Each structure stands twice: as structure tokens, then as C-alpha cells.
Length: 142
Image (cartoon, rainbow, N blue to C red; front, side, top):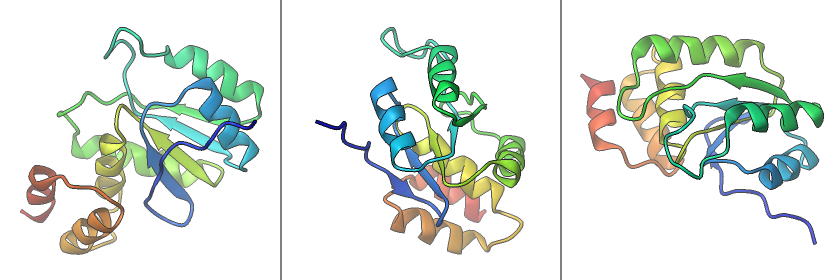
């Protein structure tokens, strides 16, 4: 029996975000054609969290590209959105970004797009993708 894909929030045609991945999730994503993983979660946020390095080694053994951009929960900075944009510009698609819940990934994507899209359009896009982050939405619109 094959492993079910994790629940995804579709941000663009080529970028999805989700919660913490396991090795089984990574295998299922590779089998589904995903080419790149972006880990936005620092190590050791929770005791049972798999180490990014072990997930990276496994992902790369399956032929996936791996980017590690750890972002502290509640401390997403505009410059990190710029870094996320840089990763997106060179990553093979389709891409899956992950953190504890997928929220940081959504924030980083929105910040990466803030020079290309109107703030309210970004908020509506995030809402349509399943995000409910009123404090972050207010930050985008200010």
C-alpha cells in the first residue's frame, strides 16, 4: 500500500506548502513528481522532529533538490521573503515547502511576491489557499 500524500496548500501552479514531512511523505512526493523540497523549519523545535540533515540526505538519495531556509516561528522577516524568492527562482518545479504547519511557508511566499502583487491580492490568495493569519495579513496590507 502506498503512502498517502501530505495535505497541501497550493500557493501557485508549481509551489505547494505543508506541515512537517516524514521520510514516507518525501518518498510519496518524489513518486508524485515533486522535484524540490524547501525546509523552512529550524531543527529542534520539538523533541520528536526529524533532523533536517537526515531528511535532506533521504530526499537527495531520491533525486530531489533540497533547500534549507530555517525561519523561527513568529519571526518571519521581509529579507527572508527575498531569500525565498531567490530559492524559487532557481529551484526545479514542482516545489513543496514545509515547516511545522505550513504557515511560515505561506508567509515567505507572500513576502517573496510583495513587489509583484498588490498586498490585498496576496491576502486573498493566501485565504483561498486555506490560510487564516490575521496578524500577518495586517502586516502585508500596512
